[in-house]
Amino acid sequence: MPIIKLPINIERSKVLRYLGYKNTKGQKLSSMVENQVNMAIREASMIAEPQINYDIFEVTVNTKDKKILFKNNFCFSGEYIFNKLKKAEQVVIAILTLGSKIESKSRDFFSQGDYLMGMIYDAIGSVALKDLQKSFFKILCEKAGIGERGITCGLSPGSGAWSIEDQAIIFKLLDAESIGVTLKDSMMMTPVKSISVVYGMGKGLAIADDEHDCANCNLINCQFRSIPKQHEITVCFDNQESHIKVPHGESLFKALIKHGFPINGDCGGYHICGKCKVIVSSNGDMSISETEKKLLSERELSLGVRLACFVKVDRDFKVSIQSRHIDWS
Image 1: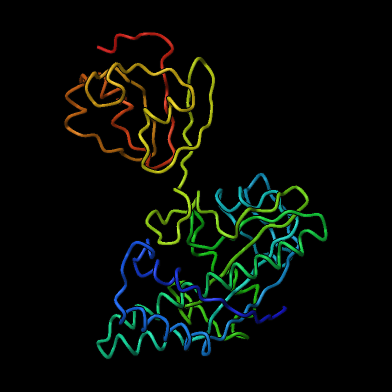
Image 2: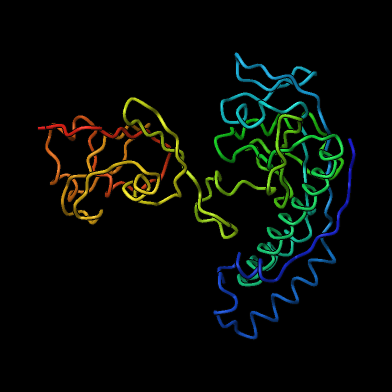
């Protein structure tokens, strides 16, 4: 199991963004905050102990049971991780850590009541760990390219729909204690600034554009999000099913129009005419406002009819568009 140490680059702009300064050019920083951030970055760069323990495993894909099988009788199971790794011939499993010193500095400042410095060191740790992950991904891309293989973006238990319980399998496959990382019963790691990551490799895969798949990440309000989370909408129209990707929070009416589907709507989606009727099928309840209810009959509501202009896309679901006028009443 190789252990590698890589230098880290702690970008000041990313630390500030993590602290809530999203527009560092337009927001005026106090000289105190600026000096404290700069000082903390210098010290954190000296005390960080970045290490990576990883290994590359041959895997077998069990399509019937939706499992990724390792030769030592361990497996990853579940539809989410199976779909991500089903084209992989090998799986890279890694544990990355910064050690405990940055975390200890943050904790000490919090215990002393200096919450700003505590937050600054915590932000620095998060930025540094993300940079370490990106550097490792770059190395893996080079390895994959040599064998004319592709590689997935990084996947971690507890993210997306992958059960955090599979964290225990990763710790059985790797000797995490060799880099000072242990796993609690809660499946959280110590030191806190540590992460486990899995990548699929294989000739049937493309090389992922980035280490992290922002489009499918469930952390909607992440400070590092580069693009909106995307949801998959299955559209049934004219006896055919289509699949479209829609940014989180977008109006269903606008999404359907943009993808070329015919939707009634004299008011242009401004919640007035009540004509953009579709049938929405979703796992779990989708909230509906009193205003929308007033524009629909009891029968329509019982059939799952919604007004597309009121529906904000916040999950994957199916929508049916009628190709002819229907008297829902």
